[in-house]
Length: 238
Image (tube, rainbow, N blue to C red; front, side):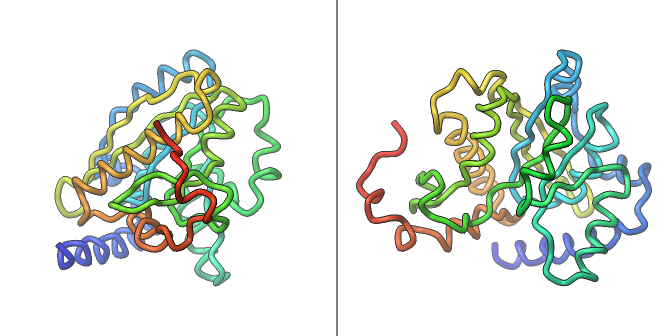
Protein backbone atom coordinates (compact mmCIF):
# COMPACT_ATOMS: atom_id res chain seq x y z
CA UNK A 1 0.00 0.00 0.00
CA UNK A 2 2.75 2.47 0.95
CA UNK A 3 4.61 1.70 -2.26
CA UNK A 4 1.49 2.37 -4.35
CA UNK A 5 0.84 5.60 -2.46
CA UNK A 6 4.34 6.96 -3.13
CA UNK A 7 4.12 5.94 -6.76
CA UNK A 8 0.86 7.89 -7.08
CA UNK A 9 2.40 10.82 -5.23
CA UNK A 10 5.27 10.84 -7.71
CA UNK A 11 2.77 10.71 -10.58
CA UNK A 12 0.99 13.68 -9.03
CA UNK A 13 4.21 15.69 -9.04
CA UNK A 14 4.89 14.92 -12.70
CA UNK A 15 1.27 15.62 -13.65
CA UNK A 16 1.39 18.95 -11.85
CA UNK A 17 4.48 20.02 -13.78
CA UNK A 18 2.73 18.91 -16.98
CA UNK A 19 0.02 21.50 -16.30
CA UNK A 20 2.46 24.20 -17.36
CA UNK A 21 2.06 23.06 -20.99
CA UNK A 22 -1.07 20.86 -20.98
CA UNK A 23 -3.78 21.90 -23.45
CA UNK A 24 -7.50 21.96 -22.76
CA UNK A 25 -8.07 19.11 -25.21
CA UNK A 26 -5.48 16.91 -23.50
CA UNK A 27 -6.97 17.57 -20.06
CA UNK A 28 -10.50 16.79 -21.24
CA UNK A 29 -9.25 13.48 -22.60
CA UNK A 30 -7.59 12.50 -19.32
CA UNK A 31 -10.09 13.84 -16.76
CA UNK A 32 -13.82 13.15 -16.96
CA UNK A 33 -16.74 14.26 -14.81
CA UNK A 34 -20.48 14.74 -15.25
CA UNK A 35 -21.00 18.41 -14.35
CA UNK A 36 -24.81 18.34 -14.73
CA UNK A 37 -25.43 18.97 -10.97
CA UNK A 38 -23.54 22.25 -11.35
CA UNK A 39 -25.42 23.16 -14.52
CA UNK A 40 -28.70 22.60 -12.64
CA UNK A 41 -27.74 24.92 -9.78
CA UNK A 42 -26.44 27.55 -12.19
CA UNK A 43 -29.71 27.51 -14.14
CA UNK A 44 -31.56 28.08 -10.85
CA UNK A 45 -29.50 31.22 -10.29
CA UNK A 46 -27.73 29.87 -7.22
CA UNK A 47 -24.09 29.94 -6.18
CA UNK A 48 -22.45 26.69 -5.10
CA UNK A 49 -19.68 25.33 -2.90
CA UNK A 50 -17.57 22.34 -3.95
CA UNK A 51 -16.15 20.37 -1.00
CA UNK A 52 -13.31 17.94 -1.72
CA UNK A 53 -10.15 16.52 -0.25
CA UNK A 54 -6.58 16.38 -1.47
CA UNK A 55 -7.09 13.26 -3.56
CA UNK A 56 -5.04 12.77 -6.71
CA UNK A 57 -5.31 14.76 -8.88
CA UNK A 58 -7.00 17.80 -7.39
CA UNK A 59 -4.92 20.18 -9.52
CA UNK A 60 -6.32 18.66 -12.72
CA UNK A 61 -9.83 18.82 -11.23
CA UNK A 62 -9.48 22.59 -10.82
CA UNK A 63 -8.67 23.22 -14.48
CA UNK A 64 -11.20 20.69 -15.78
CA UNK A 65 -14.06 22.23 -13.80
CA UNK A 66 -13.12 25.73 -14.94
CA UNK A 67 -13.60 24.69 -18.57
CA UNK A 68 -16.97 23.03 -18.10
CA UNK A 69 -19.09 25.48 -16.12
CA UNK A 70 -20.65 28.88 -16.79
CA UNK A 71 -19.95 30.02 -13.23
CA UNK A 72 -17.08 32.31 -12.33
CA UNK A 73 -14.85 29.67 -10.68
CA UNK A 74 -13.19 30.59 -7.39
CA UNK A 75 -10.65 28.38 -5.63
CA UNK A 76 -9.40 28.96 -2.10
CA UNK A 77 -5.65 28.34 -1.83
CA UNK A 78 -2.91 28.71 0.73
CA UNK A 79 -0.08 30.89 -0.63
CA UNK A 80 3.29 29.09 -0.76
CA UNK A 81 6.14 30.64 1.21
CA UNK A 82 8.62 30.42 -1.68
CA UNK A 83 7.75 33.27 -4.03
CA UNK A 84 9.06 31.60 -7.23
CA UNK A 85 7.16 28.37 -6.46
CA UNK A 86 4.05 30.35 -5.53
CA UNK A 87 4.21 32.21 -8.89
CA UNK A 88 4.51 28.92 -10.77
CA UNK A 89 1.52 27.36 -8.99
CA UNK A 90 -0.56 30.49 -9.50
CA UNK A 91 0.35 30.45 -13.19
CA UNK A 92 -1.00 26.98 -13.97
CA UNK A 93 -3.93 27.21 -11.54
CA UNK A 94 -5.13 30.41 -13.22
CA UNK A 95 -4.24 29.52 -16.82
CA UNK A 96 -7.84 28.71 -17.88
CA UNK A 97 -9.48 31.54 -15.91
CA UNK A 98 -9.77 30.30 -12.31
CA UNK A 99 -9.83 33.08 -9.69
CA UNK A 100 -7.68 32.26 -6.65
CA UNK A 101 -8.79 33.40 -3.21
CA UNK A 102 -6.02 33.37 -0.56
CA UNK A 103 -7.07 31.34 2.48
CA UNK A 104 -5.36 33.81 4.80
CA UNK A 105 -7.39 36.75 3.43
CA UNK A 106 -10.73 35.23 2.43
CA UNK A 107 -12.82 38.15 3.66
CA UNK A 108 -11.20 40.61 1.28
CA UNK A 109 -10.84 38.00 -1.47
CA UNK A 110 -14.56 37.20 -1.44
CA UNK A 111 -15.75 40.80 -1.03
CA UNK A 112 -16.03 41.49 -4.83
CA UNK A 113 -18.21 38.39 -5.24
CA UNK A 114 -20.82 39.12 -2.59
CA UNK A 115 -24.26 39.30 -4.19
CA UNK A 116 -23.01 37.60 -7.36
CA UNK A 117 -23.35 34.05 -8.62
CA UNK A 118 -20.17 31.95 -8.27
CA UNK A 119 -18.76 28.47 -7.80
CA UNK A 120 -16.37 28.19 -4.86
CA UNK A 121 -14.02 25.20 -4.44
CA UNK A 122 -12.85 24.39 -0.91
CA UNK A 123 -10.19 21.71 -0.41
CA UNK A 124 -10.50 22.04 3.35
CA UNK A 125 -9.17 18.77 4.76
CA UNK A 126 -5.92 20.10 6.23
CA UNK A 127 -5.05 20.22 9.90
CA UNK A 128 -6.74 23.35 11.40
CA UNK A 129 -4.39 25.73 13.16
CA UNK A 130 -6.67 26.39 16.14
CA UNK A 131 -8.10 23.19 17.71
CA UNK A 132 -10.73 25.22 19.58
CA UNK A 133 -12.24 26.73 16.45
CA UNK A 134 -13.22 23.56 14.60
CA UNK A 135 -15.51 20.54 14.70
CA UNK A 136 -14.21 17.26 16.14
CA UNK A 137 -15.39 14.01 14.58
CA UNK A 138 -14.14 10.38 14.60
CA UNK A 139 -11.88 9.86 11.59
CA UNK A 140 -9.53 6.90 10.97
CA UNK A 141 -10.02 5.67 14.55
CA UNK A 142 -9.26 8.95 16.30
CA UNK A 143 -10.94 12.27 16.97
CA UNK A 144 -9.97 14.67 14.19
CA UNK A 145 -10.47 18.40 13.70
CA UNK A 146 -12.35 19.81 10.69
CA UNK A 147 -12.58 23.45 9.67
CA UNK A 148 -15.85 25.22 10.51
CA UNK A 149 -15.46 27.80 7.74
CA UNK A 150 -16.99 25.88 4.80
CA UNK A 151 -20.16 25.05 6.71
CA UNK A 152 -20.48 28.49 8.28
CA UNK A 153 -20.39 30.32 4.95
CA UNK A 154 -22.76 27.81 3.31
CA UNK A 155 -25.32 28.12 6.12
CA UNK A 156 -25.01 31.90 6.37
CA UNK A 157 -25.68 32.44 2.65
CA UNK A 158 -27.76 29.27 2.02
CA UNK A 159 -25.30 28.16 -0.69
CA UNK A 160 -25.75 24.56 -1.92
CA UNK A 161 -22.93 22.17 -1.03
CA UNK A 162 -21.66 19.61 -3.56
CA UNK A 163 -19.26 16.82 -2.58
CA UNK A 164 -16.55 15.76 -5.06
CA UNK A 165 -15.07 12.25 -5.23
CA UNK A 166 -11.98 11.88 -7.49
CA UNK A 167 -10.86 8.40 -8.56
CA UNK A 168 -7.77 7.39 -10.52
CA UNK A 169 -8.79 5.15 -13.42
CA UNK A 170 -5.24 4.38 -14.50
CA UNK A 171 -1.97 6.20 -14.73
CA UNK A 172 -2.62 9.69 -16.05
CA UNK A 173 -6.44 9.28 -16.17
CA UNK A 174 -9.05 10.35 -13.60
CA UNK A 175 -12.80 10.34 -13.10
CA UNK A 176 -14.69 12.54 -10.63
CA UNK A 177 -18.28 12.28 -9.43
CA UNK A 178 -20.45 15.03 -7.92
CA UNK A 179 -23.13 14.69 -5.27
CA UNK A 180 -25.44 17.51 -4.19
CA UNK A 181 -25.28 17.05 -0.44
CA UNK A 182 -27.26 20.07 0.78
CA UNK A 183 -29.42 22.28 -1.41
CA UNK A 184 -30.45 24.49 1.53
CA UNK A 185 -27.75 24.45 4.24
CA UNK A 186 -29.46 27.35 6.06
CA UNK A 187 -32.19 24.89 7.06
CA UNK A 188 -29.73 22.56 8.80
CA UNK A 189 -28.45 22.73 12.37
CA UNK A 190 -24.86 23.69 13.08
CA UNK A 191 -22.50 20.83 12.36
CA UNK A 192 -25.00 18.91 10.25
CA UNK A 193 -23.53 19.79 6.87
CA UNK A 194 -19.89 19.43 7.99
CA UNK A 195 -20.32 15.94 9.46
CA UNK A 196 -21.34 14.32 6.14
CA UNK A 197 -18.30 16.00 4.58
CA UNK A 198 -16.05 14.29 7.13
CA UNK A 199 -17.87 11.00 6.49
CA UNK A 200 -17.33 11.39 2.75
CA UNK A 201 -13.60 12.06 3.28
CA UNK A 202 -13.47 9.01 5.54
CA UNK A 203 -15.18 6.79 2.96
CA UNK A 204 -12.96 8.02 0.12
CA UNK A 205 -9.80 7.61 2.19
CA UNK A 206 -10.80 4.14 3.40
CA UNK A 207 -11.65 2.95 -0.11
CA UNK A 208 -8.66 4.58 -1.82
CA UNK A 209 -5.86 5.22 0.70
CA UNK A 210 -3.19 4.83 -1.98
CA UNK A 211 -4.61 7.85 -3.82
CA UNK A 212 -3.89 10.20 -0.95
CA UNK A 213 -5.79 12.78 1.02
CA UNK A 214 -4.87 15.74 3.15
CA UNK A 215 -7.45 14.43 5.59
CA UNK A 216 -5.25 11.37 6.20
CA UNK A 217 -2.42 13.68 7.19
CA UNK A 218 -4.77 15.68 9.39
CA UNK A 219 -6.07 12.54 11.04
CA UNK A 220 -2.56 11.30 11.74
CA UNK A 221 -1.41 14.55 13.37
CA UNK A 222 -4.28 16.22 15.20
CA UNK A 223 -5.80 13.43 17.24
CA UNK A 224 -6.76 13.44 20.91
CA UNK A 225 -3.47 14.99 22.06
CA UNK A 226 -4.46 18.29 20.35
CA UNK A 227 -8.11 18.10 21.30
CA UNK A 228 -9.19 20.70 23.89
CA UNK A 229 -9.62 19.02 27.27
CA UNK A 230 -13.15 20.33 27.69
CA UNK A 231 -14.16 18.66 24.40
CA UNK A 232 -12.74 15.17 24.96
CA UNK A 233 -15.77 13.79 26.75
CA UNK A 234 -18.33 15.79 24.80
CA UNK A 235 -20.46 14.21 22.10
CA UNK A 236 -20.23 16.41 18.98
CA UNK A 237 -22.51 14.38 16.77
CA UNK A 238 -25.59 12.27 17.41
